[in-house]
Length: 336
Image (tube, rainbow, N blue to C red; front, side, top):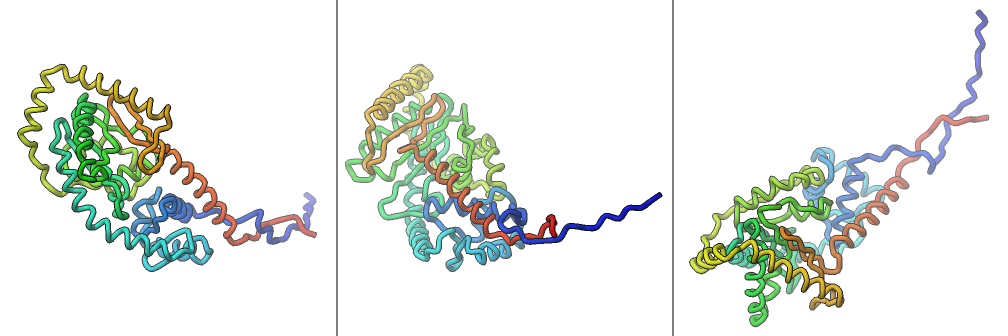
């Protein structure tokens, strides 16, 4: 048999930027986490990056990953905070907001426990910026409310009548009850990163059983944030007052399901009219209330949709910058 030897005509060359090392998915996860919170101008600590990452990252590997991203000029570190921007004022802003939140949270918890005493309310949690340990002067107290099944619109109506009186004292920002669900449908329909972060940062203040049921109904959030623990109430539930008990007893004898549907229909029509008229709130943002028989969610200015769109853009920018920053690799290519 004749053996034919073929001369090797290949050699190695750099072809940057066409061929690069495959991206480290852990680094990309870090950039995506920082991208989300950058929408809110909020730098994160290393522990928070682990907590809000879309994938589990070993703590022993995090320092090296962060250092690599920092050396590439993709992230900046200011003290214990990491951010996508070379702006030290973000760290100062966060520190100031954290300090103010510590004082605001005490009052918000008092208000939340007061709201729990209303008829048909079974769970109350603090949401919004306060649940993430951040506050600004004059900030709202945002609340997530769980009600008994088929009593959501009765409870909401009673609570919002109370809120009308809070305007007389200039305390309406204490009672921003922005999200209601009832026990017949505890699963959040919008199963995205925005909703997952809101679920995992929700700070329960009353209604331990209802909040536990809510957690069990929304395990999908664990897929988005596997390292983030659910938060649970650490205080005994307050007792319902006599007036609340009497009101609930009376309403339960007056065809409550029909009343609940009636209040739902008139509220949904009223809010649709506000949207048609492009009515705005005191901050100049178009109002909107997403309604269903088992849910009521405030969504001023399509806030959730805008956050998700900004998140998509920021992730694309961060991932592109990461790939461009990668070291070129030597590949086998045709040579002379």
